[in-house]
Length: 206
Image (cartoon, rainbow, N blue to C red; front, side, top):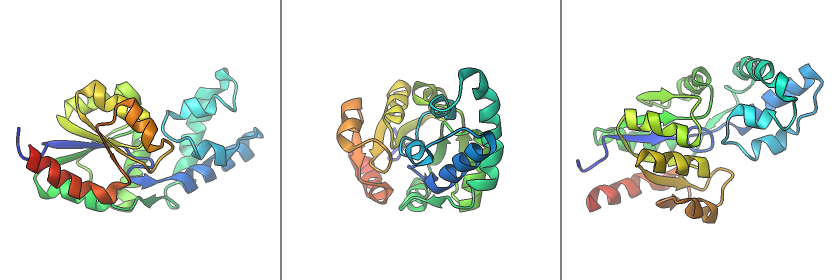
């Protein structure tokens, strides 16, 4: 094993980016357009699972495919601009890159929209795999040789463990530290500002 992992995977929402304002605006626009009540504040408090999981709280099952498609089109209009990078996101990606590693974003988000976020915020990832949730993230992580996966949700922990990668969790999403540890996270950090120093310690230990 090299001193640094050849590739590090990162989740997107609430790990690399704070997309809550844009997602809330998108749900509000979808609600106005469809006439269906959506508690957008509640929706953004539980980000992580696929869009269809959240839509199932508000729409009949038969309507979800069409509504999800409309949401994703509205998303481009309402969600890209208001979204910001999480504290330490750029530095975390730079730390991997500075030591010759690749950064791979593996997210449940629709892949074209994930790429729009990264481009808009100038977050330099080497690869992006979208529409992956929990254990389904493992295939993309293995394909890129990711030895570490960084995320904010227990679903991210499950994805890392399924891939045989080290699970590094940040407490910036809906899951508190105790829940992340109980799910099997190997490392829990307060946010990505702590990641470069952790990576240095990890490399030294390796």
